[in-house]
Every structure is written in C-alpha cells, then in structure tokens.
Image (cartoon, rainbow, N blue to C red; front, side, top):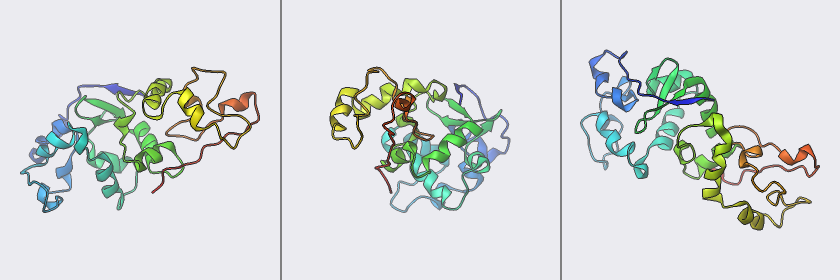
Amino acid sequence: MRFTKTLSTAAFITISVFSAFADSGFQCASCHEKPSDVLQSKHIQVQDFHSCFSCHIEDKEFKLSNTLHSAHFTHMDIDNAACVSCHIEENGAIRVDTKNNFTADTESALTAFKSFYQTGTLANSHKNAGLSCDACHKAYDYDEADSMSSKCVNCHGSYEELAKITEDTEYDANPHKSHYPTLACTKCHSAHSQFQDFCSKCHQWNYSWKQKVNK
C-alpha cells in the first residue's frame, strides 16, 4: 500500500456550496445542509462545516475520526462509494490527513480501513481502545511496515519489557524472548492482516495472537 504526501486540491468541485470545504478534504455539505442538523444541542454552534475542522482536525484531543466513521457506517457499507461520499477523491486517492496534506490510494486505504472494524485484528483492538489511524501512521508509510516497530515500542514497551510481561506464557518458549533482538514487531503482528508466526520457520511452538480489547 503506497501513501504519498501531496498538495492536491479539490478544483474539480464546482458547485459553490462545496467550495468552502474543499481545503478540509471532506464534503459534509453533500448530504448535510447545515451543521446544526447533526450537532447536539449542547455543542457550540457553528455557521458552516468548514469551521468544524479548526478544532476537530488540528487538535488531536478533539479528533472525530472514530465517532464519525462509526456514525456513518451504522447505515452504510464500508466500500469505495462510502469513502468518496465524504472524502474528496482525486486521481484515485483520497485526503486522509488535512493538516499534513496526506492522501491515500482509495482502494488500498479501503482494504486497511475495513480491518479497523473486523473483529480479531490488531486494528480493531486499537479502535476499541479509542485510537485512530494516526496514532500509528504518522506518514501513512504502509509500504515500509518495519518502520512501525518503533511506534509499537513507544506504547507497548521494549522486547525486554514485553518478555517480562509474557514470561508466564502458555507456550514452550516466551515469544518475546528471542535470539533476534532487533526483530521487527511486524514480522508477527500486522494491524491490518492476520498474525504470522515468524518462529514457525524453524520451531513448532505454534504461537497465535488473541484479541484482548473488544467492544
């Protein structure tokens, strides 16, 4: 999956009602006439959807990624049509990060995003813990998966720390006490696809991964 940083614009949108939202990367007004139609009464009222992104994009504390996706997918399929009904698409790519102007190949992003809602995946566990995509993907460099290891360690601890946590493992050997001290986490753990037992290339410990954060 290849994600690129771009300065693409939404010049292809010509209807005036959308022009105010082009630089946000989203097209809320294509379905919702005004913000008050979707905002709770206790929420601060704004005049247009463009105003929403001054808080909900720039400030991580107020990001709406999980909330918005969950709300829309209660009555929509997770498919290409759903993505481009909200995200502005240009040349087969959608805007996924307005602050940094990151875009993603629509089809590749869709494949990865589906796993966010698929029980039994690391992506789903991260979503259930309240995290959004950008908690891990600072540059959306899915094509360099091994670079994710440093981000895993930042949250979950070093191999030494993980080895202590898993020292009472049910397996014959501790999966995190390895003779590959710099082995990338992604050799076994993939957020968007199934767990892979890297050690099975030589050993028969039959490691597996069980989801612990469910909703």
